[in-house]
Amino acid sequence: MLNLDTHIVVDGLLGKLTAREIEIVEGEAVAISDIVLWELSKLVQLKRISIDVDSAAFRRFLRQLTVFPITVEIARTSTALDFRSDPADEIIAATSVVEKIPLLTRDRRMLKSKVVPLAR
Image (cartoon, rainbow, N blue to C red; front, top):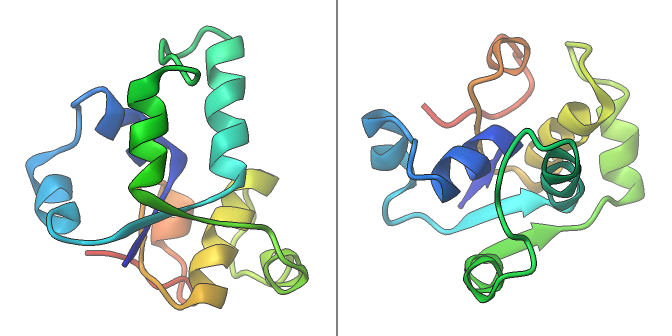
């Protein structure tokens, strides 16, 4: 199973993943932190992306995912990471730590982490 960062989800939905990212994701079960749903909605609101989060296609996409809720353990872990970022990214990274699943991200801060399991 892989945990996907918000930008990976966006680029996946838009067909813009790199060949390496496609190779990593193919055949894997995928998951997201529930805060990714908020980030997607916020990006749509700010008109930074054009994805219809109310569409049947988006709902089908969601059914293919495991969506991890923010738990007390994830919240606590997000404050003890070896990097600082925006709270959503910290929660996404902490989800990978707590759930023990690799995170697929392009975020340089997260990629430098020694505690977050990363998909490579």
